[in-house]
Image (tube, rainbow, N blue to C red; front, side, top):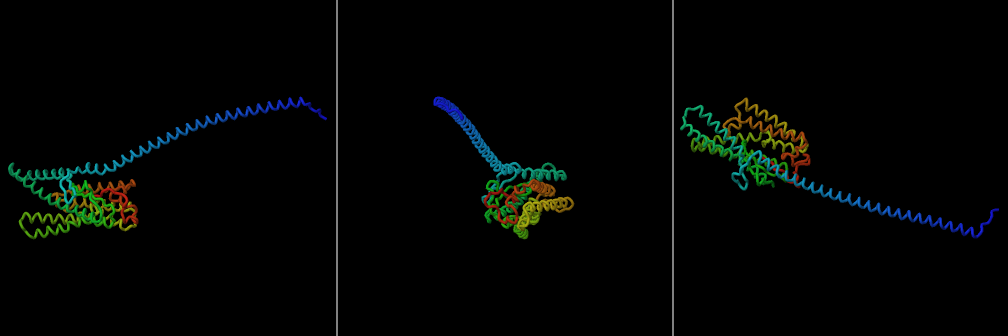
Amino acid sequence: MLPRASARDEEDARADDDDVDEDVVGTRTATTLATEDDREELEREMDHVVNAVGDDVESGARREERDGASDDDENANEDERAPGDAFERYLAPKYWFTVRDVKVHVSLWTVYMWSVVLVTSILVLLMLSDLGLFGGVVFAVVISAWAAALFACIYGTMIVHEMAHIEACRRFGGRVDEDKGIILWPFGALAFVHLDGLTLSQELAATLAGPLSHAPMALFWLLFKTLKLTEDLTFISEMLFRINIAMLIWHFLPCYPMDGSRVLACLVLLTRRVRVETAAWIVCVVSYVCTVAYIVISFTTDISFTAMFALQNIDPIFGAFCLLATTHVLYLLRNGRVRDHPTFSRYEIVHDAYHAFDDVSTPEVFL
């Protein structure tokens, strides 16, 4: 049997227990206060970090947005400048006159090239003749006047060709570029048109309008020749009749960028059975084959389309230009960018491409 504790001992034990409880509570309270202080300090530090990160993210977003906007502006400016810069850089146009609100420019290269051809021809003819100084000057003036009249008739024919493209395009809802219009370059003329909203069949009709315009012009000069007004007029009408017949055939050659190649592209796309890339490959292959044959024929035979209006055979030079233009299309094909080309940029896949994209403005196309 255990001894029973006295009352005093119980009170002392209870007091000791109370002291221990107070120490524990004090310790817990201090620990809680320290923990709360640490938590508050940690929350303040976390808030500081979050705010700093948020500011960095926000500033970074603003910076990216600003950089993106500047990049977009630069890209937009480049897109706006690129066609105009290429137009100015490669063709060196000079505004000349207006035909039915369409500006007609003449390329300085046209003036340079044909001036060299004319001067060279006159010098060669003078070296082969014994006209003397005075006779040589008179001969040069007469030949220059004759060449100027001939070129006026020939480039007038080309302007009619391009106006036929433009009027057909306008009839179907397209438009001509207000700034570029028509440019006369060494090998003919180019009309810069926008084909937004035109179907493939309408684009085909607008493409065919140019070459087919030579048929009524050839008929006109044939009828004019039958009048036999003067010997010189009869000779000029006969020449212009032959030139229009030659241009009617020449423009249907499928050598890119001739109208014949665009006709071929439209016909292939109208099948709606192949992709745009396949149509571009077909155009490139046919263009290479026909252009090489065109150059070989111009070297090995007396057949020459350009000799009718250039007074000499420059078909190989034009053939080289066609090869260069076709190679550019092939380069875009091999790099997966053929849809950037104006001829093929308006269509996605052929079986869905009967109608052009109406929600975007496409680059101008030259016809």
